[in-house]
Image 1 (tube, rainbow, N blue to C red):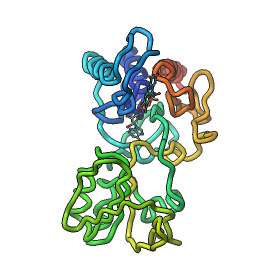
Image 2 (cartoon, protein in one colour):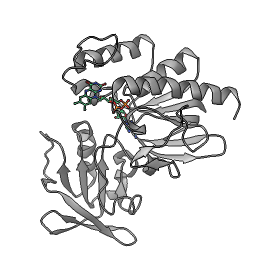
Image 3 (cartoon, protein in one colour):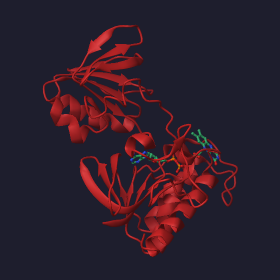
Image 4 (cartoon, protein in one colour):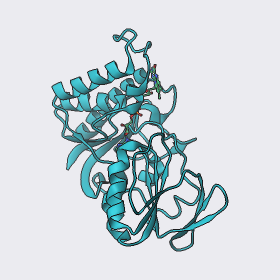
Length: 284
Ligand SMILES: Cc1cc2nc3c(=O)[nH]c(=O)nc-3n(C[C@H](O)[C@H](O)[C@H](O)COP(=O)(O)OP(=O)(O)OC[C@H]3O[C@@H](n4cnc5c(N)ncnc54)[C@H](O)[C@@H]3O)c2cc1C
């Protein structure tokens, strides 16, 4: 069992990881090898102390370099579910199970809203994980809502299994194609079904019958990942130690609310790591 699981490789997650590493704690760090698209895409950053008028690309490269120099390992997996246990937490990430005494949410802000009906039918036709659930849809008709190009390989994987894939790319320059892939540039208004998902209602009012729907997002709402976590207006509620309402569960960065700034994310990541260290030392 790890001392901690950090979810997110942006500035908040990096700051937490650096501090846990310096304190010799064991941890698994989930996110993406590209760390934070938000930082990378910033044109120019003028308010981060020590980096005068740096471009997002430059600051991002410096974060990557620092992670490498400190020998931090990124587990390039999406956490899709967290279970609260007696001695800590169990995390499901791309079909693999990880156990940790504590967790730090550093997941950034969730910009895309869930689709009406999505949360009610999660696990009953709606899935966030192609690797975990793809095999359930062999020779079936599925939909894939994709919010970023980094998931394109997962769409190709699903297309190898399913008979037909309706793809809804919610980003520019989607490069996915295939004999059984039909790209629909429409909004999904609602997901329907009683016991299980049965169909979608599209923006023009048409109904599309489906066996399953995969939602590929860079971030999943914390309350969907971990039931019972205290949230207010879509943000994780924390105290000054970055503790949430759940024992051993901390949060840092944009996911705790504004101002949405790198300096705030880095500071909160630092505090969260020190709170984890204090929590472990107290043997709670
Ligand atoms: C265009 C733009 C310009 C900006 N300019 C500035 C600026 O000039 N100055 C400034 O201070 N700030 C700026 N910001 C804001 C700044 O980028 C953010 O405040 C900062 O990146 C927040 O850091 P974070 O670590 O909280 O989250 P993020 O950087 O959003 O990182 C979150 C990470 O968590 C990962 N993640 C989420 N969910 C999961 C999951 N379930 N499993 C695994 N990984 C997951 C994501 O993939 C991502 O890598 C800008 C933002 C944008 C978009």
